[in-house]
Length: 298
Image (cartoon, rainbow, N blue to C red; front, side, top):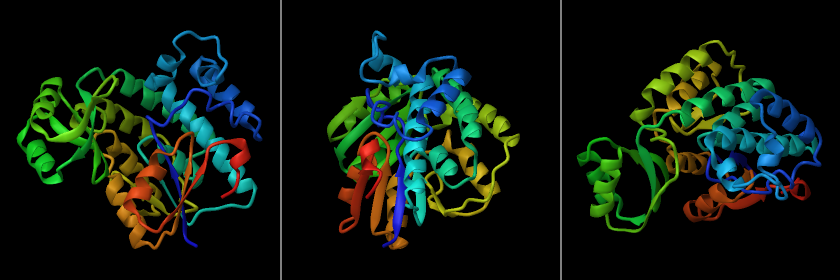
């Protein structure tokens, strides 16, 4: 059976997610290493019994969210590999694409920690624009309004019934008053991620990536900023550079999974966000979840 491992991004984090994986091999060492790089106790930020006040706010701060998710996902995927599991394809949603690059041996663990420190700081400082989730809408109406309204783009095209929009506060207010939808939810984020509003942070991130060596992937990667298979390390670097300013095309990524006869999707991370999207979009495909030490199997 053709298997794809998928890695979620921001929005999938959960308080207590570190507790579920901390006894796996290398987990404590990895949290210690990354905590030294970030200057914070990252395990405390995402453990269930922490004494930190406003813990959910701390975990949901993009400076902390990205590295904590990567740590959980990297520990889980390495434990799967050590137990003899391996994918035919891999893909990651936004931040999850960095985990995918680590999974495919394109970047080392240490490279990913340093990269995420730069990426998360740039995104946290991008205090321009905002984002909103849209659920249950008419796709034709949405496409027409996005084309008509200035400073508005689809940041995450997750499925035919769920997208995330990025844009100015004015643009988001405009579309919220005009779109017919089941739910329109403003997100608590510091900027309009995956949009042209991220141009300056994206340029600075690109300069950082210029000095980072990308290796040839050991597994084919389904990139979501440009939904196609990629084996070329230079192209993977270009796609990661472009990701911050461009939308995450996850709906098309799932279509690509269908075209490549993927019959089993394994979501590796603390929640079933991508698994839920796959279950609704890809009929007949098996969906599995690996989110804790007692789930190192599928």
